[in-house]
Image (cartoon, rainbow, N blue to C red; front, side, top):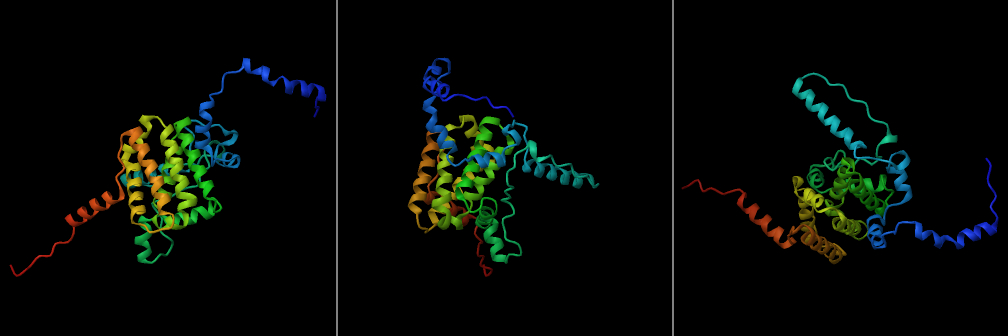
Length: 285
C-alpha cells in the first residue's frame, strides 16, 4: 500500500488553518449537544457494532428476533385455524437486521419453580431481569440502559417496529421487577427512569400520546411501578420517588397525562378488591 508522506510543516499549516473552514460549513446546533448527550450517555461504540446491522445502516423495514416471534405466532394461529401443518419460514440473516437480545417478559418464571415462585415471578419480572442482566449484559446495568437508549433512537430516527418492541420490553423488564428495587434501584432503575424522562422530552407529541394510549402500555407499566415503590421499604426509596416525580412532571407538562400517586393507586386497588371480594351468605335466612 502506498502512503503519501506529509511534512510536519504541511501538517502544522493545515492545523493552523482549521478555523478558516468554518465559513464553508453549516452551523452546528450547539443547543442540541446537551440533549443528544442525555439521549446517548450510556450508548457505547461496542454496543453499536453489536446491535446494528453490518455497516450501521438500517431502515423502518429492518427486522430483528421480534419479527421472528410475530411470524411464529402467525404460523401457529394459521395451523389452528386450518388444522394443517404450516412450514416454518426461513429466518433472515443477522447481517441485515438488529441483533437485540431476546427479552421475553411473558415467560419470567424459573424452570421447575415451586408453585409459590410461579405466582410471584409470573407478575414480578425480577428473576428474568437478574438472569438477563448477568448473561446478556455481563452484570453491567449501564449496558442495559444504553440498549434502552439505542432502541429509542432507532424508533425516533428509523420509525422501526423492532426498536419500539425492544424499548417496550426493556422498560417492562426493569420497571416490572419490584423485588429487585433494593439491589438494583440505584444502579439500574433510577438511570432507566432518567433515560425515559429525557426521551419523553424529545419525542414528538403524537408519538408519546400513541405510546400512552396504545394498549395503555406506558400507563400500565408506570402505574404498577409507582405502586411498587410506594409499597416498598428498600434503601434509596427516596431517590426512586424523586425519579418518579420527575417522570410525573414531564408527563403532565408535555402530554397532559396525570400519573397517580402511590397512595391513590393503592386506595383504588383496595376499593376494587372490596367490590369483588367473596361474599359471606348466611344460609339460615
